[in-house]
Length: 191
Image (cartoon, rainbow, N blue to C red; front, side, top):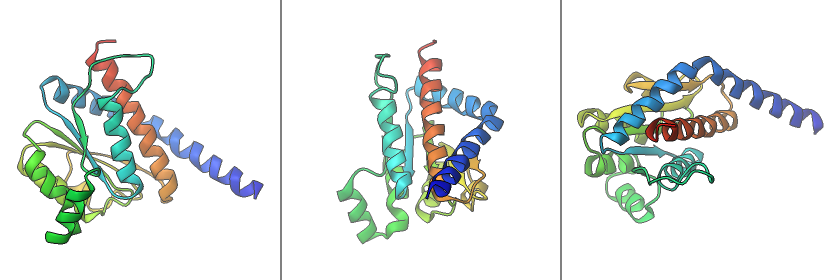
């Protein structure tokens, strides 16, 4: 059991350490998100399962605050994973593949920023949300893993965690999300 724990910790550390290779990309994405927010638009997150939880978590960090010692105004951000009535009605009436696209159709505005989170990069509902976003001139980012899947081919930018273990990918995604929250706060509030 100790060997299993040690292997998991080592895989986690090496996966997180690999993010150091893309820090220029992360900075650029944070600057882009900051501009979107400064222009009066919003950041939108979506994903399934653990990625749905990450979408909710990160949207909360933007709206409430990321750092407990830094009080600031709320930043406009939503997660498309939180309204159970909407999700179940849409899944029932249009199909599960449409749950995010339908919301992007109604809530997304030109100039917004969509972050699709999919560990495989192949989630059909995230793919369809990106398609709608592109039609509405909304900037799109994919947080993925493995080989980036199909979604990487249609987004404006992607960060692909080079690991095939879903747990490690999700751990990296929340770390990336926290980094983006911190950088956006620093850029937005001129720290």
